[in-house]
Length: 305
Image (cartoon, rainbow, N blue to C red):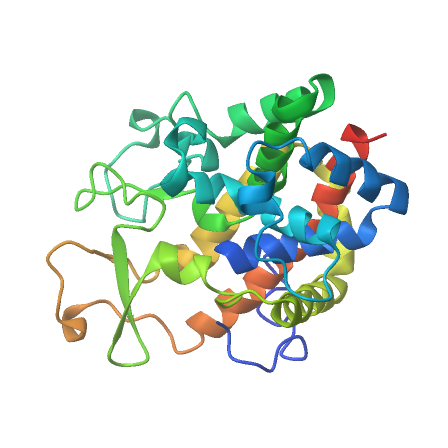
């Protein structure tokens, strides 16, 4: 995967690389939905109808022409982010990520001094899968939403890596506290930039377009994606794939060390990434999204047998 991504597709996406905001998560959900059988879709729709926020959120604001079950499934992928701002008792911030430490070249910081938090996505995801299988009613629906969302999150490279260095001794929070200069004069904060790589403002049209782009990207790397799945089919292996991509593409393998965001207001003083950075990141994101959709469908198939 790492060897082939840069050459991956200029054929894949000629559009501007604008993933894991609502748009990214809904594209993952759509890719999985396409792979589910009608019976599986019906079972999932019935489960989600038991969700305490079904009418308030999952089924709300449905666009014309989108079936209720499909819309609720798309929205289920975003519910764990929505509850952060609407009902905090359902929110679990530490579940969304794992901070595998990345130490850039030349730093004397030791990775062993920065183990991941005890609560993290590799603890939460298998727990939610088990509960989505074993429980019923609203508890089953809530855990199903978490499964759909977390499988998207674990494929966002910066949900699985955090830079530690002398300049950033507490870590950069998965790129949230790191900045680069791009395009000569623009400042980018790493994590939000990667979150938005599939664009914003999800609509049925943009979701369908994003799904097609991700499918094209995966198809262009099918042999590598299949090899990864055979060699590394566990949640932990997915997280380590994402970590490797974060190191290689978000953090440029250490060739350009990002600056600490705090105190940097003048873009001209920031380390500059290559002009190809955003385009390459967009291609990486689409492969990640495509893999997430395929893998989510497989996990859901085990939950709704």
